[in-house]
Length: 156
Length: 137
Image 1: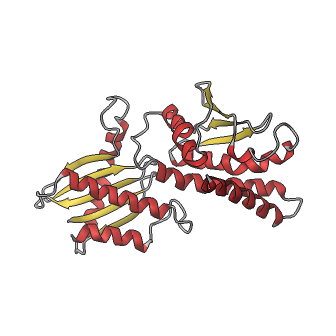
Image 2 (image 1 turned 90 degrees about the vertical axis):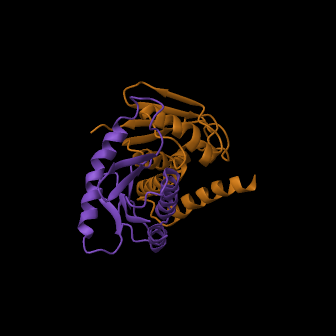
Image 3 (image 1 turned 45 degrees about the horizontal axis):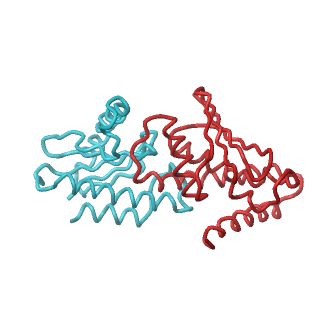
């Protein structure tokens, strides 16, 4: 149990370190930095996680991998709901997102949510980009600790 | 065992090529380059015949008079190519498979090194040692 909490602590500490080290005015930059950090993490994690898995058939197969295996490896649970419009938009809903569970439920810490979701967004983007899917990932929180990730596929 | 081991990036440029010391090294570069077409053909047929070929190991790509070329593609579309001498016919499919698995493990460890930037040429000594061990025994 304890080993699972370490990731949460590390993540919180990364965020506060990033925010401590930059001026109030470039807080947007912190989000971007966290996102690119996540991108690199996702990239190398997916390399390891897909070592034993068979080749993916298509995009949906890849998404299912992210929802089931990838989520399970990182957050020890699966995505609760995956929806798609079959035109390149996927919505992943997690009703109890690990990195938000420590904050009080409801709307009190809403303005703090973006910085806690930048790294996970980057991780999804990095994982997918290494699997050959270029996309933009955004997160949306309506009530903590539930969270929705929207993946928009970029077709060249 | 192997005479040439190559790692090709997903955009089809070489990340790493190691050959046995020979005066005709360029020939192996051509061999590997040619094999990419066969790799492409094999992975693009995935999905059409469903259960087949979803394995990462692609098997024998093509034989030439002196060499046999084997291929392997990771889920991230990084290609591994191993060339062995045809005379070495005692080499079974399983042994090739385990060579690729070893190579894949070494590659994954290398990518997870924070000092490596994805897409750069591979300079890791540890990775090279693994490749060397495959070419010597």
